[in-house]
Amino acid sequence: MKIQSLTELYEQLPDHELLLVEILRQIIKEQLPAYCKEKISYNVPYFYGNKGICIIWPASMPRGGVSSGVLLGLWQGNKLKDEDQYLQHGSNKKIFYKIYQSTDEIDEIAITKLLKEAIELDLSDGKTPKQI
Image (cartoon, rainbow, N blue to C red):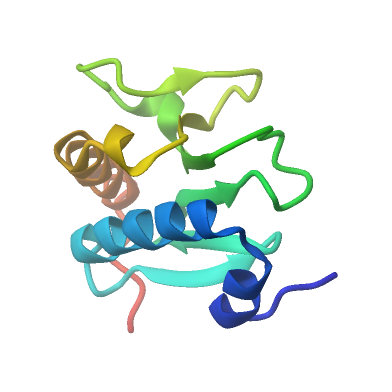
């Protein structure tokens, strides 16, 4: 199955995952600058600027390696300071992540701090932001 839109994705998700995805998307969209975009990639929401910034992967979507809950992955997680040690480091050398089982686990302040760091990193390669 190839998901083409958020509507199609939302139709596939159980209610508890849908709520987590919506909250995470809202936090991300509030933090990302205008040059950043969202698309569906690998059947899940993917956010990018000059490079990949983050991804939201619900457990019900195949190939994510998530057995339950919803994963928020930062593409350049290995380059982030993550001073609060909020992210987990799995087998992927670049993507560091946090898996949420309930809305109570979502720490908007920690996520915002990491997103700001990820955006700085996205802009640090000397490229100008991609045009809208």
